[in-house]
Structures are given as C-alpha cells and as structure tokens.
Amino acid sequence: MTTHRRTPIARRAFTLIEVMIVIAIILALSGLIGVALFSRRDDAKRDTVKIDLNNFKQALDLFRHDFERYPKDEEGVKVLWDKTALDAEADQTKWKGYLKEPMPTDRWGSPWGYRQVSEHGDESRFDLWSYGPDKQDGTEDDLTSWTTSSGDGSGPIDAPPLPSPRPK
Image (tube, rainbow, N blue to C red; front, side, top):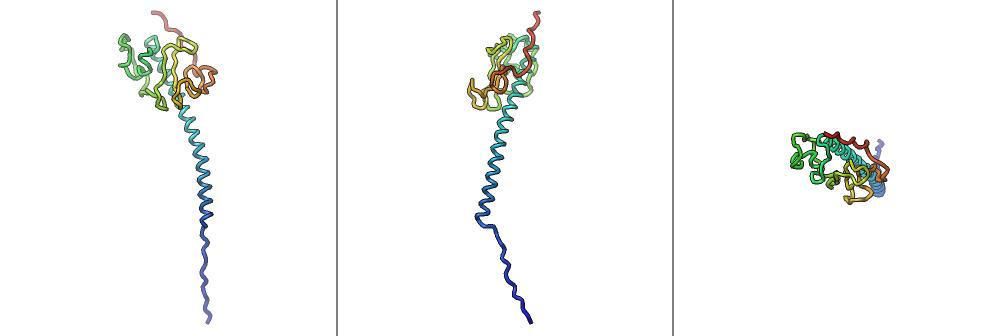
C-alpha cells in the first residue's frame, strides 16, 4: 500500500509593499483626475456667469423697450424680478417679470454691479458686472458687459446697443 502524503499548497498573498504601491498609484491617479475636474468646474462656473450676464443684458434691453430707459441706479437689477423696486414715478402697469428667478448675487455670492449710464464707452448703455471668484472690484477675473470674458478689454461681449427710443 502506498500512501500519498499531501503537501500543503502555499498560497501566495500580496505583501504589504505591493498593497502600498497599488494604493499609491490609485491616489496619484485620483489626484490628477481631481485637479482636472476642479479646474473644469471653475471654467464651468465662469461660463455660467457669462450666461447669467447675457440673460441680464437681454432683460435690461426688454426693460428699456417697455420704459424707454434702463433701470435707475437706485432700482438696480432687482427691478427685473421685483415690481416693488420700481421708481414710484414709473408706470407700474408696463412692468413685466423680466427674469423668472431672482438673481441678486452672482455664482460666487457677490451682488451684481450695475450702473444705469455706462462709464466704459457708449453712454446710452448700462454697465453690468460680476466681481468674479476673488470678489474684488477691478481685478482681472471680473466679468463685465463692456469687455470680453477673457478680461483683456478687447471688445463687447454681445450685440451693439439698441437704437435710441423714439420721441413721443
């Protein structure tokens, strides 16, 4: 009779070093992906503010069409969604909801800057701006109605101003 002795089969497990190397590779890859995603998130927020700026500009032009003026500095952009912000002398029957949703602040939480008479070129237009991510006035990251979104001052973002209203 022959008896076979079974020899235990040794299973090879991962060593601590191998596990640590895999974890380090995963962390490095997730760090690279995270940096790329966060930079795209900032770009996306900036693009969203540009869209908001253009929505405001269209609403301001509609307001001008109805009232033959842009909102006064005292009224500000609030008048685009809140009828009570209208000047007491204004004909409130002309007012429409120019923006569906109130937008008192930009995407970074700063109030929108608005001036009825532009100080940057055509005085028949308005000035509208966002202070940008740094929330400081006059810095390179500001988004404005009178320059391109790149902040290089190379020209207007949108179409030329409306013609002057007809006299009554």
